[in-house]
Image (cartoon, rainbow, N blue to C red; front, side, top):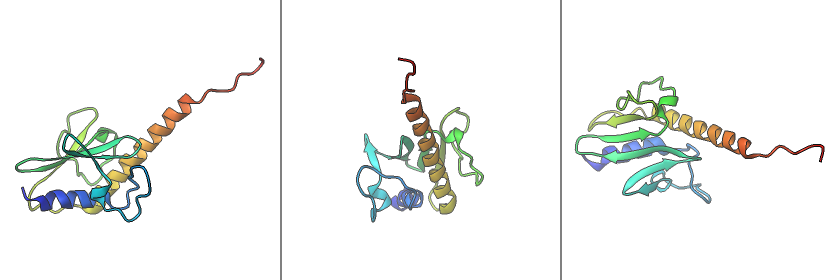
Length: 131
């Protein structure tokens, strides 16, 4: 598999999604907004969004909470049977629907933000009265 497929998928997923690590990310390319875990690119924002894996015949993006995301464009085409994850397999020469991929990544960020806010709300201690 040529690196162009992987880079196209990375670029398509990263444009103005709001994904960031610590510090200012203005002017950063999508490839600078990802971390790596054991050599695997990892996109995260308030939690894991997805990972990218390269194989001989496919580049795979696995969304950690993909089963909870709406996919009206039908991008998910792998790992469809699980209760949590969903994946997209990109094959050499396939056209990538960049708009749909960006929408999916943004939805994953929104889901992570809502779960992070829910966790923060649970940690807040209600003030005690009567003491």
